Amino acid sequence: MSSRRRRAARPTPAVFVDRDGTLNHERHYLRRVADLRLIAGTAGAVRRLDAAGFAVIVVTNQSGVARGLLSIRVLARIHDAIVRRLGRAGARLTAIYVCPHHPTAGTPPFRRPCRCRKPRPGLVERAAREFGLDLARSYCVGDGAVDLGLAAATGTRGVLVRTGHGRATEARPPDAPIAHVAANFRAAAEWIIEDARRAPPWRGRARGRRRRASAAEMRTSGEGRRRPRR
Ligand SMILES: [Mg+2]
Ligand SMILES: [Zn+2]
Image (cartoon, rainbow, N blue to C red; front, side, top):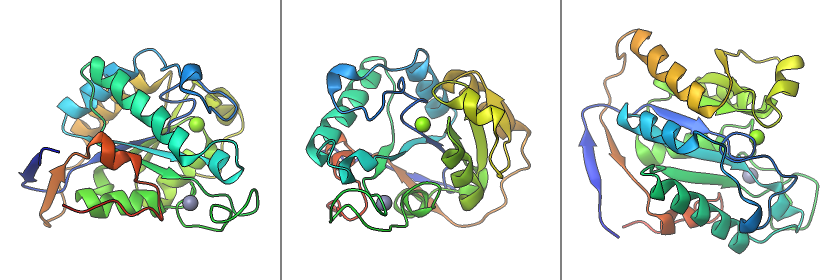
């Protein structure tokens, strides 16, 4: 694929966004492209964040794979469909990172304790390494307690959305800071852009580089499935 590499003067801030209940309408273990429905405003949110200089990275627990409910292949097809639909609306995701594991359910190799299942920080840490991200200026958006836990575990700001299970999460908030509660991802994006403007100036010194993964790369970006390096 094209090598869209851009050197950035400083590491890029990111918005790590949950998938089910945040980007797309919640289904109990979404396992068919036919059941995929993006939440209204999702493409606009991705476009706005991208234009504001954020990497937009999907971080999702998909224990349905460990449970044998869907294969990695079908999961990749669903993610290709998300990328395609957003792309048609002019919205480009930077990458999609998946935890296909579950510590106790299903069968090996996906039944295992891992460091990538949210709220654990593995996927965010890996994305930060691979894309040169500045976590101190980054955000996690989602409808679940695990998304707020992820924010706490990675030193990012947690934004709860009221779509998906968000209202239930709001009613029984987890023991993790919530920087903001938004009606949906679109509203969360607007708040994030404003919050980033208010935030204190850049603190770090390290140089980073920003690039985008191709859809083909995204397909294989689950932990344990190394993606090819160019
Ligand atoms: Mg969710
Ligand atoms: Zn995992």
